[in-house]
Amino acid sequence: MPISPWAKVHKNESLMSVIEYKGSKNPDAKPIVLVGKGLTFDSGGISIKPADSMDEMKYDMCGAASVYGVMRMAAELQLPLNIVGVLAGCENMPGGRAYRPGDVLTTMNGQTVEVLNTDAEGRLVLCDVLTYVERFEPDVVIDVATLTGACVIALGHHLTGLMANHNPLASELISASEQAR
Image (cartoon, rainbow, N blue to C red):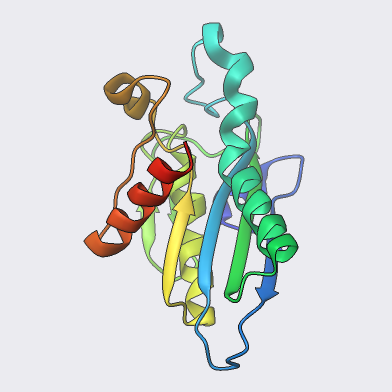
């Protein structure tokens, strides 16, 4: 299924892949939803990135790859959970049909957003995917994404940022990451 007005302008069509794993014996159990940003290449669009790190922009799909890996492991381990994995795949390239700074987009939930920098595409893609996953009535939603280079500046190359609006879940995720070392 195509995602986001952002992703409709490029040569390679965007795709939103939905993977459902139903391991709970309780048919009414609400799922955990995992959302993965999957830009197969992010040049920055018209607001093009500097050339010195352009080769690394293929890694902008690591959120989607991580979610895919978790879904495979959930099935292999036969976890007693319901999990929905949503992979948001697209690219951000310059071109004659590319969005420009100043363009106004209408998101899936009807909100309009003015694009000021075409290199902030991940937020727009996730905006539509997060709207889409509401239909699953999830217990929790976790998104995995590379959203800003500022995280690398603040934390370096060996840590990741975690932002949450639910402190108990954030604490559980941090604890799990420490146990996995």
